[in-house]
Length: 238
Length: 273
Image 1 (spheres, chains in turn cyan, blue):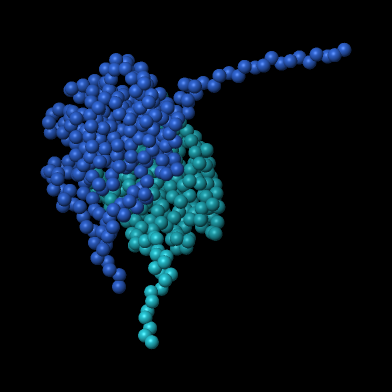
Image 2: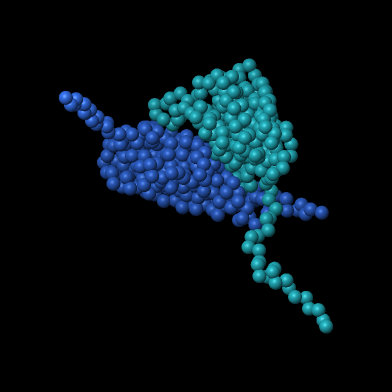
């Protein structure tokens, strides 16, 4: 009696309805970034957890990068793309310094970052950036970006996986008159530097409760006329 | 063994450079690398999802006797999330040319800044200002060359040149249309209703500004993706001027004030003897 291999009925009866996921050049390493601008200071903060899927890759990875004396970039998203972006900006800043014999101002760096992101419009940097620093008058400035370079200067911003948890709290505490309203009204926050750092710590502690990708520790960088200083606060590690 | 040949970038540089004059600095369009994935369309769709352009918006512009009025809201949304209430959707290309933003915020910002550069180069090369028709044509031709690549822009170029007021609608499909009245965005239908009802060609500037402000307000009232601040600009022979910027929440109570509640007279207790 010859054995005929009969095709398995279950396979043909229930064909798979979804395509196999193709290789993707991107991954999301999670994390949240926040920046607050004040009269003469700027606070930039980011958590230090780096994840992939449901795993934690490391608990102390810095998402903050100081590009110039007066600008600090915090980015969440795909850290490999972010590393490449930081190196690109560093190189461009070095060239600028050689050509102009001075450091780039924060508003100039803001536009450079926007153009750098847009030049990869059809293969974007998976990076959600917040640029913080002091402008030419010494006032704090915060610029927030989308993945392809659209940017806007504001008084405060947050990006990343915890953005939707933190932004309403910042709106509640810091929201001021829109810069688009006529007659123009002052829109910098009246908070002092100490109060702003406290607010940042509180928001990260809350975000770590409800966002799985935010936690471990928050690195806070403060720029003011004296210079740049760092603080590190522990967060829940679960 | 992983096949890494797919990671070699295949660039669009040669074909893009061919359609521009490379000798004029800044006029050659920027070159863009493409990812070497098998399914480019699918990849672009996924990338667009990641970028999540701000589609919800209301912008409008119309020509009347004294010039052009341009107005817009200021909300940017990424899906359900309001990513900003303070977006500048009216971009100042130069002192007498304005552009509006609808669709992809980055696309609008980048290409309108690029347009400003090329308008300045035109002035330097020809010793006269570029016309609104010329500026809108520059932008439309650039967008046409990127047709099908996933750019998302629905912009109006408004300005004043030697032939008077000019208004063009230019979009990322490569379309360019001249007109006297346009509204673009998810709230455009609401704005058209108010605009078409109240429009008269011989309005004064103040009446035209008020009409535009009301149209934006009504659009933000009914469209969830529009909101923030209603900005109104006027473009006349001396260039543009920002006429007003009002929070739409405050405009609501200005147009529809809550009437004072009438206080009922209290009934006195009557003591029964």
